[in-house]
Length: 151
Image (cartoon, rainbow, N blue to C red; front, side, top):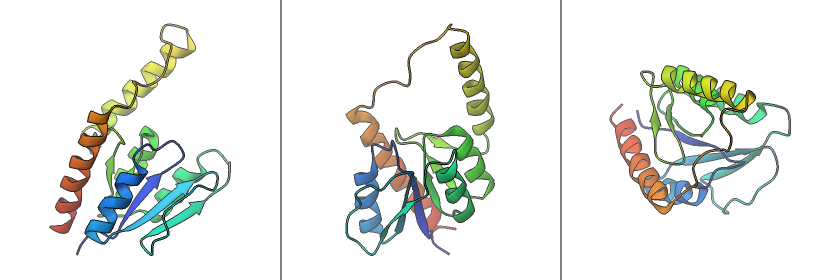
């Protein structure tokens, strides 16, 4: 049984075009899930899902639809954790794969950084997105897609 779909947490995702190209090459369905309408290519493989502005609405839609063998593209660590529990593969836009083994550490780090930010000990956001991140993402997406074909 092959992989059925790629789900993109799309509102701030910098690699949507890369996902579209890989999906076209591998003949995969893509669901682009966002809080507001956004441009997606005219393709039978790409479906735009607008969920509205409720907190976690995009995450909830993705978790309700993604399952074993699907790929979820997300930077959101709680979403990654939920998707992994559904049996999905999870890849960040910078090409880091979250796994059942790594997600606990990622959640703990997120919690610590949130606490430090609340108390002014840490400021700023994530590191800037670079060309090497895009390249790593494409490589990892290809690796994961091929791994799902073996399931």
